[in-house]
Length: 328
Image 1 (spheres, rainbow, N blue to C red):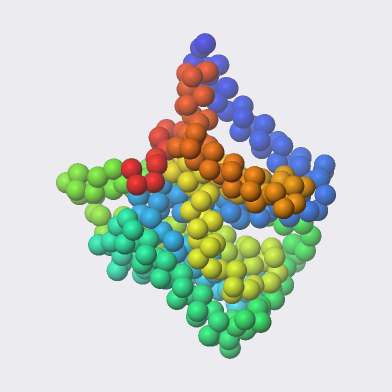
Image 2 (cartoon, rainbow, N blue to C red):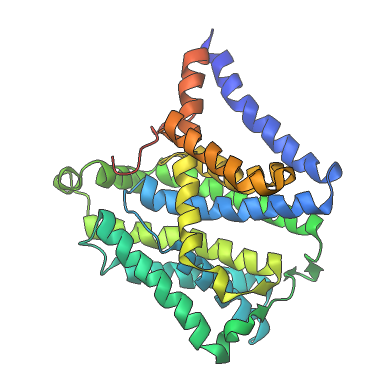
């Protein structure tokens, strides 16, 4: 098989998926569009977390906190200060990135389980702050958020929200792809493989670790801000440790160190429960069993399995970076 043919085959799935996503709203109802917008939000979180954990090797259980910070920042700016929706989302993402950078500074000397425990504590602190700062966040009562509006165009329907999230998610996926293929991405990978060797090669560990935290937090804060406008209501109880575990589950199932894995893992977590909804009481059992089987038979995640079979059948891989297993 010629190289030109292989290149066309590699690009064909992207074209098919792109056309399918653009045409999807014409064939499905509003509920499926809502599920897809939730999927896009989780893909954004997974991209950010994979940049930190999959590519840089820093395990985080604090992304529920970043998600909450982005959501509440956008909500407060929109409802209390009456900022335009675009500025609310951008400001929420930037503010969350700053918080991520500041969190990364004291965590520079931590790794593995110690880093995971530190970020877990951060999640608990933020959740408690959301409850205690009732003057700003409305505490346990929750907070309503109006639909996003851009230049007078209000995203008040599932159809409009779908295309908004599709454009933002696709754009951020391209940004992440360019990032990992550049100097910063190579530095991240060097840190993941061996910190001492990376430092010997001239990589500034402190700088790139904190940058990884900031970028990861930016993606997650952006997702949180968009989720606030998507759902229209914020409940502090939703931003719990369980949500952080869900985020980690996404990148493990999809594949660590893989952008494709971020997409596939989010799809597994969001779409599969909808497909199993008809099983009633058996839904949780079947879903859990499928997760266990996926981890056992696909130790490098769904993206790793796709890479392996693509190489076997076509002689090419899907991504230039080999997915990793957590802790390796």
